[in-house]
Amino acid sequence: MVIVMKHNATKQEIDEVVAEIHALGFKDHLSSGEERTIIGVIGDERPIDPEHFEILDGVERVVRILHPFKLASRDFHPEDSVIKINGISVGGNQVIVMAGPCSVESREQLMETAAAVKEAGATVLRGGAFKPRTSPYAFQGLGLKGLELLREAHDTYRMPIVTEVMASQDVSLVAQYADILQVGARNMQNFSLLHALGETQKPVLLKRGLMSTVEELLMAAEYILSHGNQRVMLCERGIRTFETATRNTFDINAIPLLKQLTHLPVIADPSHGTGKWELVTPVARAAIAAGADGIIVEVHCNPAHALSDGAQSLKPAKFAELVNDIRRIAQAVGRMV
Image (cartoon, rainbow, N blue to C red; front, side, top):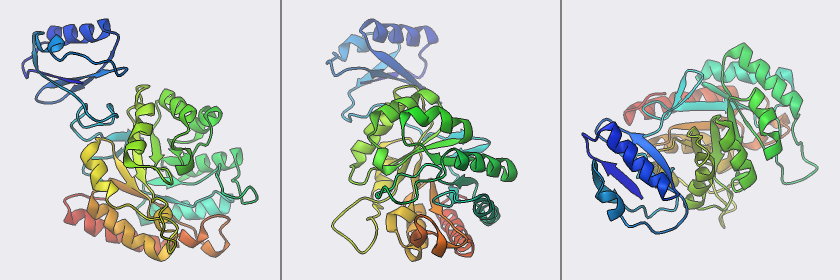
């Protein structure tokens, strides 16, 4: 339920509505816009009579929320959220570019790639220290050593770091090194992890699960938001379908749909969405045209020798071409990279 206050509602009237929400055993969520204040009622599924609040001073109307996700919805937060990360804005008019290797393999590999993606226009460095792999025999990442190398790259190139965290007990460790904590597709519904990430108050990049619906993605975000952590970014990275010609089926529909349903920034991952480096650039272009707030791309200086996901990694020169392409597309739709 959302309580829309009158444009001239006083602070006392707003406080009285909030007090009544608490008296009924619910929590409040205030969203103060330029025109008026909106108060969300958060709690269990007990029915509330709208008239209970409509008779209070300063209340314009009460609206029932049909979506199961509350805090992620535009009903609670009509305006786009803009997340600030070390002076960089995610959301709004800006299109963000995150890039780097799938896995941190060595200091030389990471530093070479970081220098290349920054020169091409990336503002956030991605890299995996802990890698969830289908096979237990595949490269699992360098762990703590990988985190230390990522932090060194951050200090050298002044780029925020995004890296994956796989378990709730690792959140505090990864949070010491990373600026953005990524939830991989396989962990989208790892609820203990989502709770822990909500408690950190650090930015979170939440990837859509392999076979998850848009609503399930938004409900996963709700877990993080319910702890007061508003710094959540959603990531469309392709879903598993009957098609086998590509690694996944990139759901371009999800981008404008998410922008319609939620105020949270939406990031596109064309690398995992396609699994083929030749398809990464065209899908990235489509994602920006569809309204994505940014992209996250895998880049490797020598993909043929990459320890993971070499087939979908761009060489630096191709990545530079991609950035130039999306700059032109962003400009065409009234945005900028």
